[in-house]
Length: 195
Image 1 (spheres, one colour):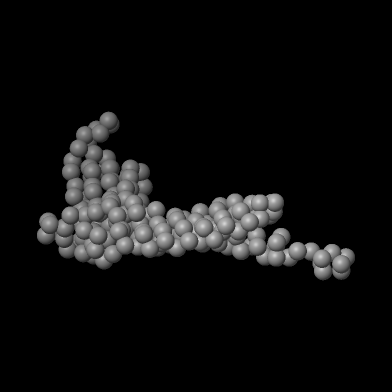
Image 2 (cartoon, helix red, strand yellow):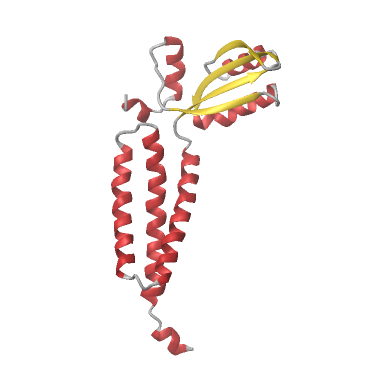
C-alpha cells in the first residue's frame, strides 16, 4: 500500500486536474460576467474581463493538449466548466447590476399601488387600458435591479394576483427632467460612462 502512494504520479493525476478545474472555474465565471457586461453595453469592463478569461483558458487548454492520455484532465475540465457557470450566475445575481423595467397589469384600481410606489421613491407611468376580461391599469417603472424585490413586495401587498413582467433595460434617456431625478438614483455610474 505504501509503495502505491510513493509510486503514484500525484502531479499528473491529482494536482494537474485540480489546477485545470480551478482555472476553468475562474475563466467561465469571467465569461459569464463578461457576457452580462456586453449585454449592458459596457465598453470598458467587458474587454478587460475577456482578456483574462482567454488567457486563463489558453493556459488550461495547453495543459490538456500536453496530457491527452489523461482522462482525469478531461473530467476536471468539464467539471470546472459546469462549476464556473454556476458561480458566474451566483455572482451576477448577487451584484444585481443594471436597470430593469417593471410592467404591472392589474384589474384592481391602482391608485393605492401608484401612491405606494411614489412614496418609496420610484418614478412611474400609468395608463388605463382594456384587457381580455375588462378594464385594467398598466403601470411602468424603471428601477435598479437590486431594488426589484422591494417592488415585487409592494405589488404583492397591493394585489397578489397582479400580473407583472420584468425586462432588463440597456439604457435610459435622462432628458426628461421628471425621469432624470429618478434615473440619477437608479443608473449606476459605470452605465452612464458608455453613453
